[in-house]
Length: 294
Ligand code: ATP
Ligand code: RIB
Image (cartoon, rainbow, N blue to C red; front, side, top):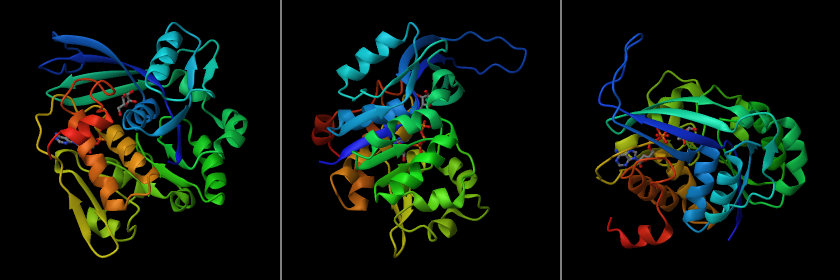
């Protein structure tokens, strides 16, 4: 099996659940508070590891009270952290997540994730070249992607970019990415288009894979637009569904499966993840995917 490197964010997620969202100046009563471990990089690394992938996470945390919790967690999850960047004097990244009827609104304070930067990239560059498949998101400084992706591309590595949170990306960077996995909202921002999704997908066959929540996933296979429908499940919390999709998709890619099978695997895993609260808390393990009927 190929080795997977995730270069990305690590957060502590603070969830607040309520039946009403406050307007500016208003206070409402919530009905639940809980914490989970999150950050798109960490989530995707955990999703990969739970599905049997060989994965190492490259990222940064603060030398704060969360450090031991996170290190123990990654070790338990079998996520490699040999190159974790522990930064003095800053807090670990935090995400404040309002949950409202299975949907979410998120504010992120990056903290130590800002240190997954060009300096860190230069330090990890030689280690990274020992990996085969790379997974990036956009919760770390863009300079990191701009430094690493051209080098990895030059070495013919497989590069998967989940462009979240969305920002418009440089065309050269996009050209060097093997697979791009935006959700339907991110899609327009990242690819900077005004057209229908299908008009843009045709320009990126077998490359741009758009997740569309409960509708599933849509992409162009070189001949036609293909939709892989999501499974019908009772959604409790969709936080981390995109991360589960991308993590599972990456595991299948690392095993050399055909693209459609990789997407189906991602959809299957993501549908299971929405049935539990929390980002990582709901991520499935390999044996669950084999035993749950489709
Ligand atoms: P998030 O940012 O919350 O992690 P996302 O917006 O990046 O998620 P979505 O497109 O909402 O990603 O979801 C990713 C995948 O998860 C979908 O393509 C689908 O396979 C699955 N999924 C999401 N919501 C549902 C749902 N309600 N029922 C079944 N599957 C779902
Ligand atoms: O994709 C979900 C993640 O986004 C959460 O875990 C939160 O940390 C934010 O980064």
